[in-house]
Amino acid sequence: MLLLFHVYMDFGDPIDYENMIVSLRPGMTRSRDEILKKLINMQYTRNEMDFKRGTFRAKGDILEIYPSDQNEKAIRVEFWGDEIDKVTEINPLTGKTIGLRQHVMIFPNSHYVTGEEKMQNALITIEEELKERIQYFKDNNKLIEAQRIEERTNFDMEMLRETGFCQGIENYSRHISGRKPR
Image (cartoon, rainbow, N blue to C red):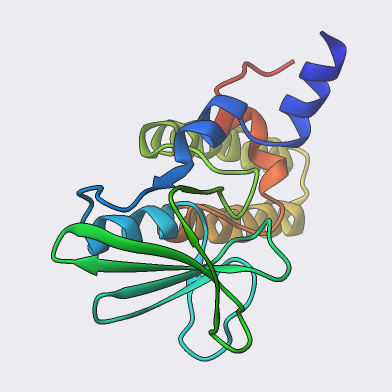
């Protein structure tokens, strides 16, 4: 039990992580745009020029994903309308086909992924705690500390709203997972 608690503290919620996994098979009906949005929610970034782990690129009916858990293989998904026509493993440097796949699973780019509703609730509790901390610093005549924590936390909250991630996200793990303060 202690190990699970430790993992839960250092990483995101395992259930949220599992719910973010994308499963792709030839013949599936999934719109390209739906998959692009899901990849962004999984903290992948679109990058047409620098194709590296944790990125994807899209040109016409072809989507290429460089999974964050792979070193030498990327995935090419070819669409025919809203249907996945073909899934292949490719060499990320050359683009040459390595093999045809009947199923691939794309895992989130970070362990700190969560659903939209949990993130919105987290932002509310982060803001509540921020107000308490600012008041604490002001009450103790620590105005610089109050200003610093306000600026930093507001910046982090804006990043969480826009991208679902920020540097030091582990500092907000209690809020994101919905745990009560100790």
